[in-house]
Image (cartoon, rainbow, N blue to C red; front, side, top):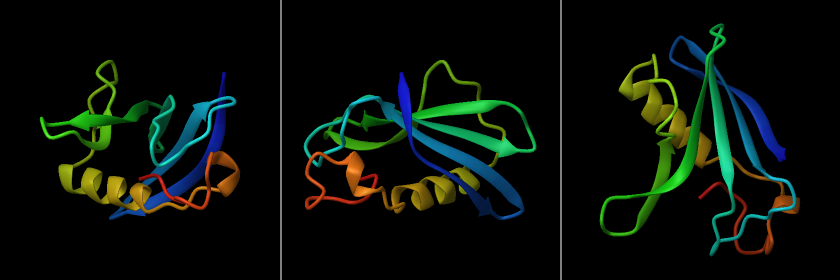
Length: 108
């Protein structure tokens, strides 16, 4: 079961995206842990939903928002994708979703 952390619309260029951030019910975010979480992205007015998660990229242990392997390939440009991800990364998350809210208040 998942609980909704935020549900927002973002305008990137001439496109509108609906983004919902979900975490496993009962889980909390913390600077040192990565609970199960999903970003559900929908380019409006399309009905297809694309799924992303925070995952390790490269060999140096860095993390980024990456598309789930089973998700449909995105239909928007790489530049729109980068701008959308950067906007999401700066989104403030309510403190009730953090184990230690004094350590962090954002997605990353």
